[in-house]
Image (cartoon, rainbow, N blue to C red):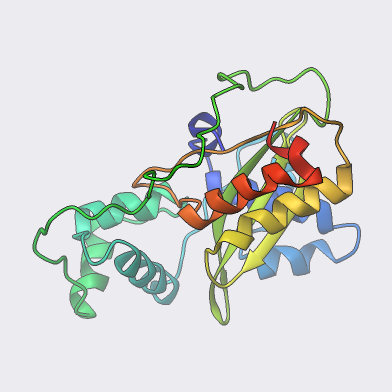
Length: 239
């Protein structure tokens, strides 16, 4: 998804969760959906009215799990200041003192700086799609531009990854996928659902952010799968 959409400052993670709840509330009780995603019913209703959703405060146990997840993702590179920034960037309020305390009490420390390791491999012979969208985030009709976002959901069994596919015309959720790990098929499953639900005409764009150090990335394997789709009938998904 574009950096502009990915960096919605107010409740970036919660916005995705509320959008997903909106697709399910006809089939399941609203209170149950909000409880599963650890968001409030009032916050969802405020979002429906066009207000700003409240931010979700994690318990110490939930925050510690997130800290450990980030610590593993960045290979122990973050101390408490950068860890605090990372937690906040994912939509969860946390003070530096609280993050520092949890890291110290649980023996989570930053490693000494080592040689930079590339986490996104762009050294391949596959073509890089041009930026056809060019920051035009207001398509005139539905099924012209699909964008994707990835967020984290806390459950009783740990963190899950949620990939959501949005139609930029009205921000409607057109596809989603939930998995315990951020794998290539997390994104492609959401993309496939969007295609089967909408059956868009040839020419629709799938626009996604190429990733940054402070946001969850679509892994390099997903790029390979997306390029492989160019040879399939679903070619129109990629523009």
